[in-house]
Structures are given as C-alpha cells and as structure tokens.
Length: 503
Ligand code: FAD
Image (cartoon, rainbow, N blue to C red; front, side, top):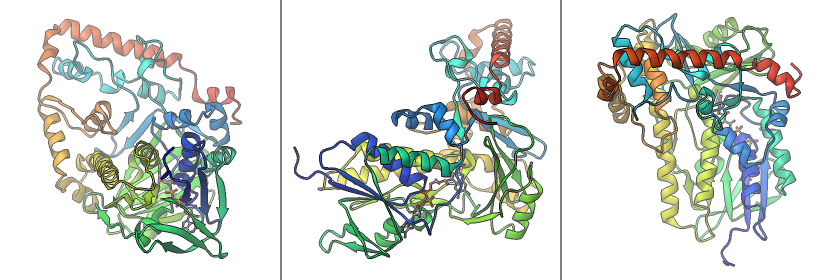
C-alpha cells in the first residue's frame, strides 16, 4: 500500500455542501484503511438556510448514496420538479417552461425542433411545449418516474428533480454520514494553523481550544470562504457586470395557489422572484440588484406576492456572482458557496457541490498533492462555472422588457463570446451545439431561447427530406401521444400520499 495516503480529511462547515461531502466521501472512500473523516460546524453561525430547488442530476447523487427515494421525499418534505416556469421574462404577461427531459424525438438523425421549425413555416401553430412530456405533465400537476425500459414512450426520457427543505436534507445526509463513520465536532473556528514549509493548512483551532488537524481540508464554510479565501487568498473572479443581482430576500409562506411540480421564477422590476412549493410550505425569495432597488422595496414586493401568509420574517442575503480564481490550493479544496455563487435561476448551486465532489473523487490526492492534478481541477471547475454563467445570462439578455432601468441594462449587455456565438447559431438555422461537458444540453438551450422569443431564420436542411404532409402528420401524432401519456400520469399529490407523505 502507498505510504503517502491521506489519513485525515477535515470538512469545515456543515451546510448542504459539508454534509453532501461527508456522506459521499464516507460512502466512496470511508473504508480506506486508517482513513478518518471529521466535520466541524458551528451551531452559532448556522447555515445559509436557502437552496431548495434542484436539477435531475441529484437523483444520481442520491442513488450513489443508496438512498431510498420515498424515505428521502418523506423526510425532507420534498416535492417533485419537472422543470422551471419563467413568468414575465420575455415580456410582461408571457410565460414559458424549461422542462427537464427532451422535446419530441429525433427523426432522420436530426433534432426534433428542426421539424417543428419546418412545421411552423407550413403554418402549424402548435407550440413547442406540446412536444414535452415534462411540460404537459407539469402543467397538469402530474408526476411519474421516467421509464427508460419503454423506449417508445414519452416517459422514456422524462427528467425529474426535487424541491426540498435544505435543512432537512442536510440532517438526512448527516445521519447517513455518521452512520458510515464520519464524526462531527461542534464549535466555532477562530484560527488556522499552517505548515511553515508547505503553507498547507495543518489544523483549525476552535474557540474551545480544541485543535482539529488533517491532511486534506474541504472548505464548506459558505460565503465566508474561511480557508480558501481568508487563509489561502484564492482571489475571486467577479461577474457582477454580467449578472448584476447581488442581493436576495427570502421568506417561506403557507401553502396556497397551485401545487404543480414546477419551480417558478417570476421576473420583477429589478430581478426575479422564486416560488418553490414543498409539501408543507412554499419557499419564496426575491433576487435583485441593489443598484436598482432598495432593500425595503424588495421586501415589500416579495410580501405582496406570496400565495399564503408569511411564516417567518424576511431574511436578507448578499452575494456576488462569480467564483474563486482557484478552487483547490495546496491541501484545501472548496465546495459550495465558499467556492462561488451563481444566482439560483436554474437551481445549479447544489449541483455544483455534487460535481465538485465528483471531480475531487476523480482526482483524489495523496499527501504529495500533484500540482498538475490541482491545476486540472481548477481549470475544470472554472469552465463549469463559465458554462452555467452563459446559460443564466441568456435569460436576461434575450428579453424584450424595457420597463425598468434594470431590464434595459440586461437587454443591452454585451454577452460573453461563447453565448454570442450560441445566439448567432440559433438565430441562423436553429443550431444548438453545447459542448459535451456542458451541464445544460440541447433541450435546455432550446427551451430558453425559444421561450425568450428568439426565432431562427431557417432549419436543418434534412428536415425537408420529410414531405410537408408527413411532417404535419408525425408531429400531430407525437403531440397526441404526449397528451394521452400526460393524462395517464398520477397527480403528484396522490403519488406523494401513496408513498406516505402527510399532505
Ligand atoms: P452554508 O449553508 O452557509 O454552510 C456553511 C457552514 O459553515 C455552516 O455549517 C457554518 O456553521 C459553517 N461555518 C462557517 N464559518 C465557520 C467557523 N468559523 N467555524 C465553524 N463553522 C463555520 N441552491 C440550489 O441548488 N437551489 C436553490 O434553489 C438555491 N437557492 C438559493 C437562493 C439564495 C438566495 C442563495 C444565497 C443560495 C441558494 N442556493 C440554491 C445555494 C444553496 O443554498 C447552497 O449552495 C447550499 O446551501 C450550500 O451552502 P453551503 O453549505 O456552501 O454554505
């Protein structure tokens, strides 16, 4: 066995990031001989307390942990999520859905939307939404699991995620991690001891006087970035000029309004409001740009737009869009908010934790800490943030709104090069070619570009291999099958009751 194995991993912080890391590492490498895993968190400091909406990749994370989905849904007060509904983004009064899963089915080896674009030139007014089982089911309040075993069913490629109580999820993961041997220490870290030679973090010192030493430290301390920034001075790549929202105010409210398996993002004068329905309450928040709206106005707008009575005082949050220049320095790896933040418009933060853990596992170090591997980790992390950033900017850039200074600024902003190219390709012949590594793939870009009113001038020439009549006929059939399948899906609420949730 190698002599330079990591023996002690210290996870600093016990929010969603810390406990996701503790559970995953316990599961994946907890049985490495002699390995100890300790998580330090401060009850007095607490967690950020938001982060309720996810994307489908979380099902892979939960499966890797061996989590029973029904138990997880019951214990975290979760609901299912088939996509995100965007209200008033393109223009006031307009709405669209970014569904998980695909539209229609590929024909003649070409993406479905080219045939839909062709049908439109033939005068067929059927909206793209009619070809998404996620949208059809979501708008009817229905939910079913994907059926990859039925390749001809629209359910074969349905995607789903969850909306849950983040505090309960962290507690759920804590039970798992502790059950697998991770140990937890409560206390506030007041100092950090570094190795004089390597500059590595040797130990964190708690208020109680206790010292927690380790070979590898995972900084999960939230916006503070206690190790990665305050100790190692990672630096921050600031994207405020592209994503100007820098504040949020959050408040839960009692259930009210519809109970669809969708997160809702409603554009407001200087940002947007989220609505995340859980089993027992609705999570709400207004993400806004402090340059364009006062905190008082944000609170007033949020409270005036709830579907039920507020259940707590509104909670203010401040942030900066961007990420650390380096996510791994020496023996410190950052996960979660300590590493960066992109507003929760597409619910990507928890996913970034998950993919960070995956990357760490792929490049798991020895005590030698290979500089090339660290560099690779940092490059891939930065690339992932950039890819997501461009997708988020699209929502702001592609708007017709000019009713406030905020929206005029968004509409007029110069997009990053990669996004500008994507927009040009789509505007031409409806081409969508995200790189394979990108989190958001073809259907997601299509949903948002089409939803925000961008209409391509042409379509793939291969679509013309199908006659006009055949194009109409096939599309009509696909929409019909999706409609019938959606009607046969159980109502989400019935399904939740069936698995033992007390609704
Ligand atoms: P935190 O929850 O802040 O945890 C930090 C931990 O570090 C705590 O345990 C704290 O006690 C500990 N700590 C800090 N300093 C010390 C110290 N000195 N000593 C000891 N312990 C210390 N994500 C999504 O995926 N979907 C969403 O819908 C979503 N919505 C969001 C909305 C807003 C407005 C914001 C700001 C974030 C949102 N997120 C969302 C992000 C999500 O909340 C976070 O990614 C997630 O909660 C992880 O947070 P964290 O664990 O990194 O940090």
